[in-house]
Length: 372
Length: 198
Image (cartoon, rainbow over the protein chains, first blue to last red):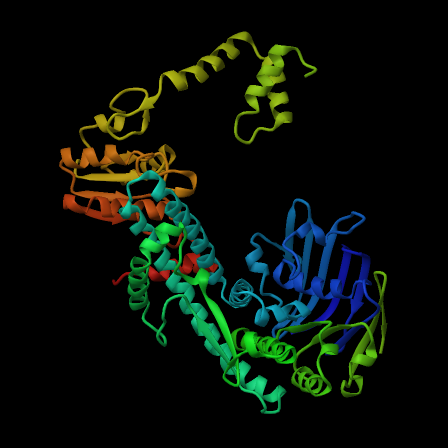
């Protein structure tokens, strides 16, 4: 897909900006704190209706007030469409081709994006929660049903944890009640685990290939799903359900003592191995960054597989952190097929000579000026 | 408060109702001021009666002004089936179908540990008593298709295992008369899971 126009009104530090885009590679250049990332964020918000940086939607509104409207013109395989998203203290309104969408979920996924920002290093370095969030965001972007299962699971988990906390206090153990929540937890948990397993498997295939390319065959990347209970390859849902229930009965005493649920997808993790060694323990800063990059590029391919078109790639201030070889690899990967938006403080840090037909935009204090 | 005491008390009373903020409460209170005295008296009586005149049916736990309630007194209904619902509103919805001829049991809630609602806080003991006394053969679980309703249904089905009953759960899936293409993904997935052989 190709973004032809981006117009923002009263968005963060932008009073009004209208950018016509006609190249595959677009670079936003400017000093710090001018609003470069805000532009990428706006594209991200148009795709997913929420920001990658904050959970607080009100942060997106204009600092000086006024109605916030984001507008995009997108060229897809089957023709062009326009996206409008207006944000206010009351909520969000989304329109596709001028038609208001009653459900935001209908709007999400019209435009697909993959964002790579400095904080994505946390996917490799950070705690398991960051990796689960990554999984959920990505699977949710292509499988709408997944987010529903996930929200059901979270509710059941909360209820069950509450029950586990009450039981010791009441004296008697209501095992019938716990059994009911076990069954519900396992029912939904199993579905989430299966979705995650198949997603990670596909991700692994692509990431391994891409990682080998970026490192010129020097490194092998392996991604492993580390669920909280052992998982065989492509298990039957019923079999997995039984295993889940058995595991729950095994940890019952421990759970009652600690008052929390110890088994389930909420304790899943992803493990990255570079040449057989765990990346978040033994990997260098550079290796960890390359791993994160491989993941993001793999995601691009995955989205293409699922929706039949390449998503937009948003690179927030990450190009300059890669060495020249990796930059070349990256640029070669996307140049012809993936429309890319890059922010950087200085054009020198990006090797522009390899970019044919790139647009450069200067970003200064909420104003964007084009320059070819 | 700037209003005389009676009116500010009335505003305060209105603002305790769900969905009514201080401004609406004020508007309602001043409307009452303009109403005819008879109408106000009727209104007040209706309010008091709903509290004094209504209680739970000793059989099915539905709200009623006579005991047992009209449905439980109706001898023409099918004694062998009890349909379990969460709220009196759900019972009314089921009645509107005119298809269900059995009796009901109203739980007044669903199991939710987060809100401190366990089996004893909703009317499950009363249901068990009915099952051991009566000639019931089937229990239809018509609690809501959400996490709490599902848990309640599952709990009940385990609880009544010893009674040798047929226990059924209402189906969920596509709305009737709609087009398949307008169904959301989740509903459609559920409908697919619940498909049956023809």
